[in-house]
Image (cartoon, rainbow, N blue to C red; front, side, top):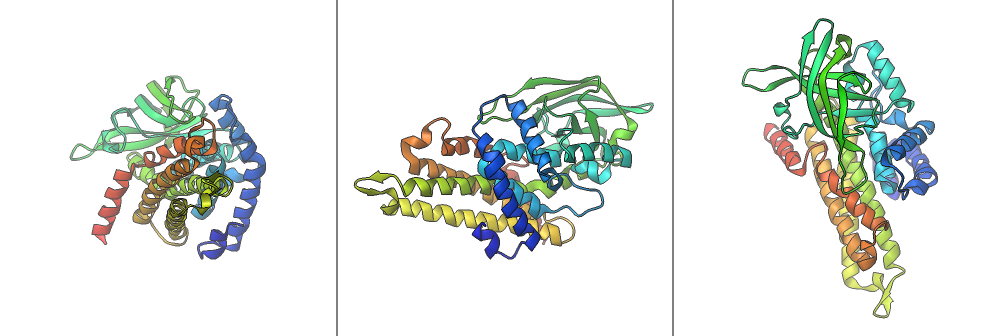
Amino acid sequence: MDSFIEQTPFFTPDHRSLASDVASFVEQEIEPRATEERDVDERIRDYVGVLASAGALRYAVASHDTRFDVRALCLIREALAYSSALADLAFVMQGLGTYAISQAAPEHVRDFWVSRAAEGRAIGAFALTEPEAGSDVSAIRTTARLDGDAWVIDGSKRFISNAGVADFYTVFARTGTQTGGRAELSAFVVSARMPGFTVVERTEMISPHPIGEIAFTGCRVPAEDMVGAEGDGFNLAMRTLDTFRASVGAAACGMARRALDESLRYALNRRQFGRLLAEHQLIQEKLADMVTELDAARLLVYRAAYLKDTGTGRVSREASEAKLYATEAAGRIIDQAVQIHGGAGLVRGSVVERLYRDVRALRIYEGTSEIQKLIIASQLLKE
């Protein structure tokens, strides 16, 4: 059992039991797959199937009538990311793709997609970002207009995780313009089989990731597939990100914890100048900085998760602090891990080299570090 989970007060006995079970599951089922170089789409489907068989997806996919357990979400993301960033992605995208649906879609639409996602029978995606609208959601240009008993969607989305793999997408589109020119957004669930939906291209990233651009050309979506009421889209998008934001920090902690473990192992076995690396004071300084930053990051992450689980309303500042600090700290920790490994840390396919590529995206997606600072300051000034 991870001593951090035993020593800190954020967890119930059920959480501690879950952490132990997930650690065993990851060691047995995820770690042996972590270095596979097969087609990324096939790997995502494989991970979704494995996670579904283990019952793990029910911790990512929210239920309409049960309080969502953010601490459980974070514990699982941390454990998965310790071994495989792609397994972590497969897990969390089932949640991001269904959260708005679970909260606001008509009952029959909700039950259809949420049950399939939780059982691994359908893969989800969250389609918010556009070529000209990343952090600035008000700049969304994709439109949806009501035509009889359907909404007709036109536009494109960029940097969409699971593009081309997903069976359905939660799509945010402009259905009007508010006073002041800001977009009035609405949300829709769109099947990948709908006429007018296309995958424009797949985007190759520095780390294996199923991501790309999708487009809608006169895509007719039944009116019943609107998620929430007209104009609820912005609120649903923000609620989704607010719920999952701390878990990005948890994934960063998992990667950082793996980097620290690999560094300790290497330093205790590698000899330089007649003694172990671990006996050199400058290496000890690096290890001390790494473990201190990791502990601080985990405390921020699980404080935010605990407050979300036990409090009321949003915990925007705490979640943003967790994501900001944990992702930035993980980048520093993994960079130091590569430095400790020296040339061995640059070898393609080594654990720390893989972590070095995997961790970089976490400071960007679901709100860049710069956006997190704006959220933190904004919330602080309101208090």
